[in-house]
Image (tube, rainbow over all chains, first blue to last red; front, side):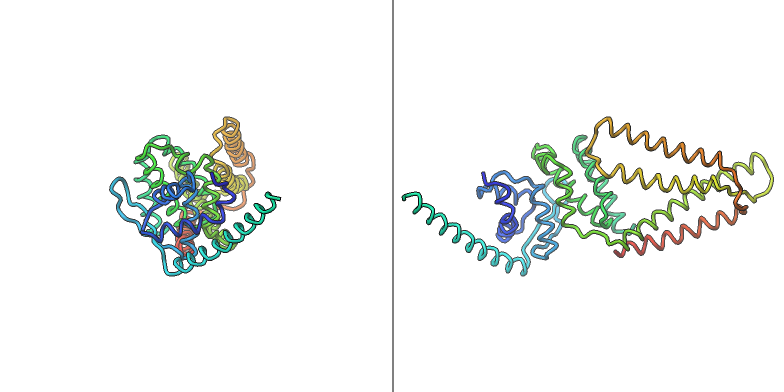
Length: 112
Length: 218
């Protein structure tokens, strides 16, 4: 299980990535995050992130009639969101590369 | 309150009926907590709509509200409120003034009704005395209304008996203070004709409506 503190900085970008695939809604996003191996993330954790992404105009939302029950809020990526997603992946790769280099160096030390 | 907010409020009330009793209870606590936050009415109702939808979807899947939004409802609400623009000091003061205007209107209407009853039962003139006690009581009632709202919206997720007792004692204390000042402080400040009092209520209500329309533009 990924520690929540480690998830904190990346979850926003990951939510953006999931929305970039197709227009989707809150529960579906948390389900997909689980499928990708992020663990069980409650819809209540995802919702404030969606509000932040919407506030920053990275996503837009529309209400559509769901098959069951009342209207549901669907999110899609905006042009600014696509740019933000590129930046997120670029930053993440830099971070992952740096951690990998550090890990490789540590392995060398273990051998000694 | 704008037409858009009123419509959303009605729709949310209808949607909330689709929830189970447990869901409605959780939703009530969340809504009370949001009411106490210094955010716009429209934001309150839009957030409420999204959360009701989440809980309805959760119930369709057979999961509890705690599984949908997390165990700590207060943290969930705080995380949401962190993402919503808050009202500035000027906006908060205007909103408080608007609510006070409505409160004053209601109190004057009640006072007018009491005067009409006195006139019908005892006769006399339509000019009535206003005592220092009744003014103190009015201020106390308005202050009490604000204190009770602050108290109720501060932590609605706390259902402990101690909190309910504290709340009841607070309400009784403020009511007793108000009644006592009305009865014991009988110094007459001025006299006013019932028509003038009714006209002042109408004017205050008109100012309230203007303020309400203005605060909708926040």
